[in-house]
Image 1 (spheres, rainbow, N blue to C red):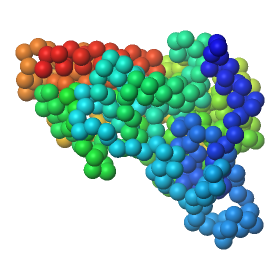
Image 2 (image 1 turned 60 degrees about the vertical axis):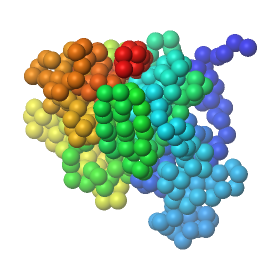
Image 3 (image 1 turned 90 degrees about the vertical axis):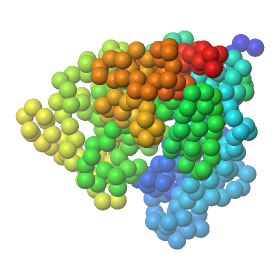
Length: 431
């Protein structure tokens, strides 16, 4: 049977969505409810969110009121009821948690975004005993994208969640082990052996390691920002929230492709969408196809030379202050939805402790760059030079957004993941 184009499958699901296996009841402006929606969306779990708006609706669920700490409540189709569950408890219910099956691996990969998933597919398919460790769910930042339209082979686009799901299934089919909700906190590396220590005490031993931990979105560093996270302030494209934004004014901050994709996705649901960029135009950082669509959408507003300088609200966001960075003019806009796509901060805190060379912004320096721009190899123990994606520690490679000088595109990350496995083979053959 001929397989449908994934885009057409997505369209079919929009017209006839899969039956939810879990219903989530809670307040929309709730950090815990948001974390559950985001987890289920990125994990490609069919779910339905039922917004509670009164004490009476809450009491029908068997809780005292609208603000009961037992909310949100998750009801599964098998009758299971979970009150204010943690993400780990949901993962256990879904059967996603597992322990390492081996005491030692050929290849350990940290980070299950496009680079890590690609490395897992190529490593496992080429016979390496491969384990992939992810602090959250598979997909990384790409997994939150509503549609990736410039990825080779998908002329009509594919959602980040669908792409991640397919890559996860492909890696598992080749025998890769995937450990989700496991965060690496420390690493010890010697030539021929790397030991990763996870936050839960698990120890991963491997002959070669690929770091593909990606980046996290930058913060505004404004008062109230942390307390409003998940209750009006969100980091990333927020694809799980779009359906809740009907008749609302949504603000997206950032000038990259992730921000542009988010704007066009929200424009399908929201009354108005405003993209806020600090620079003079979108052309410096955004792909032309997205620029054309943004300016063609009547409900989308573009504010250049503009920054968010204040957040207003106690338990939930109710307004933001925008400041023009050329004129100093300020205005306050009512909104319950602010999505921040502000570029990345790499997940490399462990590397400093392990003595791995980073650049001034924390990205891992690899290959030829190690001998340029003031970097040096330090105690590099081998006669050969580092391979192209190899860090200052032999056998430790970096791929994707976490790497100094990488191209911040999904296709580039996939390519680097595959390329890193090639160098892993060379490294293992020589040790």
